[in-house]
Amino acid sequence: MAPAYRWSTIGTDDVDAWAQLTNHLAEVDGTEEFFSAQDLTEELTDGYTDPARDTVAVWDGETMVAAGRSWVKLTLDREGQAGSNLSGGVHAEHRGRGLGTALMEKLETRAAERLEQLHPGAPSYFGVGGALAGSVTEAFHASRGYAVVRWFNLMGRPTGTVAEADRALAAVSLPEGVTLRAPSAEDEERTFTAHRLAFADHWGSAPPERGLWAAGWGQSSNRHQASSLAVDAEGTVLAYCLCGQWVDRELYVNLLGTVPAGRGRGLGSAVLLHTIRAAARSGEYDVIELDVDSESPTGATRLYERLGFTGRHTQSAMRLRRG
Image (tube, rainbow, N blue to C red):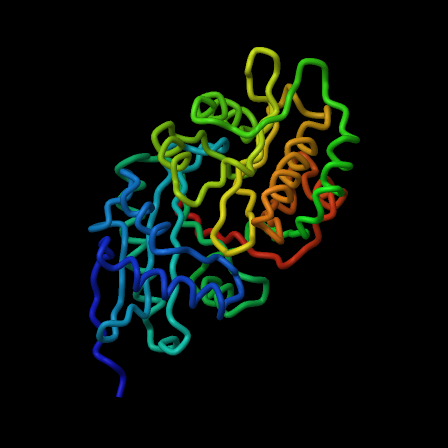
């Protein structure tokens, strides 16, 4: 007999159960997208998520067996589209019972409501990400009309030794007046400005919202001591490599970018090599990973390959257009 499921929203008292489910999905679906209860608490309390409306949970007794979150971008992307991100999943032992379909219907309904509130009349889409090529997750979304619009490659490399990292960074020739260093609290605004410029020409990019950026800058998963900035003599950020950690001994590059005026000067390589050296010197990491758009306009994949990164797996970005 199928269990009698209970539906609810997700509150801060539920984050332990939510983390258990999220990390189960990361393992069984092979996405490696692990989150702690603290990480998920910060998502719920970021000031832009309304847990009572933007989240859904399904329970079998005291066990959360399905969950999802709906989030709408606050600004239009460079194509003038309004975007939403729908995330979540169903525990492997509870699949095939209609929970995934019911969950997506609730998330889509909420996303449609917010899209109309924030961007009335704009063309819009529902977006989902993280499905491995050929996976059951990808097939499920395809059955609901979603189509793959982009591929993202997870790449990684060993941290290596301090001596290796020192030699690689010593070989970098920086433009006159440019220095490399870890970010401080005073760099938040300047790095925000750089990020707006660096990603303005990237696929699907929408201008970041100031408040969301500030909330993200202070998250406990960030590892600013292993992150890097390239700044000019006036302190302007020309390139940045911002890192976080979700898995023991693994450093993840959340964002890496170079402002258009700084491209072609080796600054992307420089900040990444500076981060690799910081990670090696810390002794806290064995691996560094990052995701890259397979069609990056800056040729980022080739840059990472030159620095020793190799492919781990490929995930799709899928969309269902609404008009």
